[in-house]
Image (cartoon, rainbow, N blue to C red; front, side, top):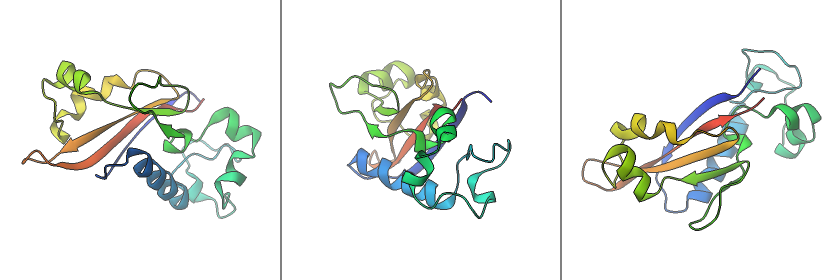
Length: 148
């Protein structure tokens, strides 16, 4: 099947890990992910009334472990400053990266295209705090590629 790209915008909150957890919960509850058990391309878990009702149930499947969900559910934690990104983690865009890619330290939605290539590795996610016109944090952009 190959890896799939995914992206999400969520309201800003200072705790990026909590924002990731809340996003994962929403995506799971909505069934907005690919479920490997029926292995039907072009479908989402929401298309199946018998889809898993808990993440533990979802991840107990060998097929899901091997193929992933092609969604944010494949990401587990947000990397803290100074930590090295690892498989299934989300790395925040640094100020240095923002300056190099977009020419600004405070990113907005207008800069998303300029930073999209920062998610270059499969099974690793990225996130960026986006600001409004007044320079205040307004949302968080999560994006990456996962799934096999």
